[in-house]
Length: 385
Image (cartoon, rainbow, N blue to C red):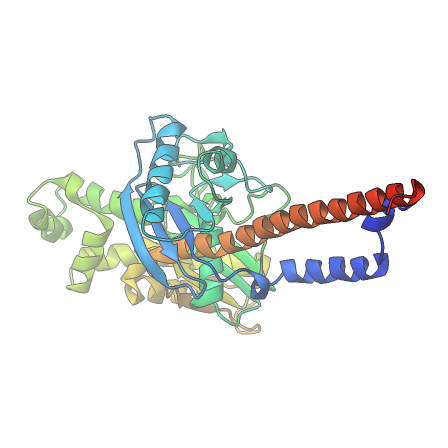
């Protein structure tokens, strides 16, 4: 008499081949379903959600302010769910990808620590997937931005890429041969918290002198506000623009005035850029990538920032003059990179979700075949036609 095990394991050689092909497929987006997904980018000041098609085109976006960090994580989760449900009213959504501003564990489930939010060992993926009817993927926001630039932007064609995102703080990501390098515990690429000035400015992460305290949006605004609060003569232009209200000084305003030729704002961006170049040189010594992609909101300053960064990089690069230099490029996808990358990575989750469903169907069909064979054998043994 045939057994279910016999039926399930016939053609084992072929099954081995299929498993091998499956491993290769998991490494390629070519087999991911061409479906629309939602990407969520959660930063220190905003939450952005958007529907993205398989070619990286944004079909619709929604934005809202990040709930105050003193509130419970549930408030942020509510915001995410509301945005997804709003978008799903108008679009067929197959998966959700979340780029979180924090350290995400290797399983891409828990946000271990978020300097600008109240997440501490927060099981974000499980909580969100429990409230939505689609699979959910969670990753660090810099990882998702790097993935987007590698797939659709400034990093296309690069085998070894490092992404640096300059926003409220500094995020980072490493891609090698089409794979995001997350490290053993999932927290690789947190370049912003490298210590560059021992005993320097206090960082929200708890340490002093972190790189992001000298080359980020917060650093830029802090320096401008300190000069304006001290009524420095070099700050008269920006003081006049904000009518003496120092808290109204923002990063975009500094960039705007720098483009108009304000000497102080130009100098502040140069300072930020020089610190950026120093950090990039250190990363080149450690990682030796072929390309650095600079993204995030502060990168909107373009050559006002990246020009000084390139100069400082060349001055501080180990072995300068005797080694190839990595290309430094501004990100092409702008502030939407993290959202687009999260949505694109979610397509892999959608593929695994579909495969899991297909395997369940196949198991059911195999069992039905076994049951029918068993019934046939029983009828034969009893002499029933």
